[in-house]
Length: 353
Image (cartoon, rainbow, N blue to C red):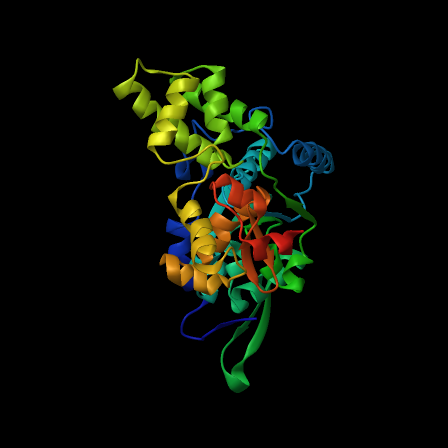
């Protein structure tokens, strides 16, 4: 329950709320609108999720009611923010975008909620990092569309219930398991976004290249897609980097040869692994006989943050079968040894038999 003192009323706190002015801005102003899709037809991948959302959105339009609150989770770069923007565009409503770490004080989340209009979408990124006070303010807002607040102190304290316009909260997280049960249970729809296939990423690369007016062949697009770690964000970034090489070192067209040679120069191998990924696998092999070894030890040895390894490096290495997570720590799989051209120790071989 939020507490507001007598000498600083709710209206003043909302007016001077910096989050509403700086963090909560329109979707088109925050992202490169020419690359991010605005409808389901141009949104490539996540086919099952799209079909479900089309039905959900159509039902909400026929009922003339806001959508249920939604939670999207999965590794970074798979399009959680993008699909929230698509939903807003399809519903014909505004989307307010913020992130959980920026909602430090009660007035931050209160200001955003009080500024919402009926039917609008509030998108909170990294919602698992929401602090306890902000989370408790959201409970009645999500369930009953009200704000429960206390004004005054001690004997003069009063409890107020302020009505809110009906809105839809869309949360995005890379760590769904870190959400508290009360918050997670208040979402009507919970969906996991999956890694993209090479075929889907090839379409993403072709689409991005067309928008950026980059000449590319289908084989060139496929070569980039294969090294994009199943992630559209990485694929889009690689299109820009490879196009730089194509313009400076080649004839401006990205074909399979240009793509492969450019990505080799960028130290991105055929699995999409970069120097950090290979350093992680090599460390476990060279220093710890292939593992298992604790994540804190790996982070200290690589001079990397634990969260960076868990959120950026590990998901794809695990999905690709190059790394394994065990109760005793991380260890390199037989496929990981083969990919780096290393021979497995006899003790490690017996563990995998």
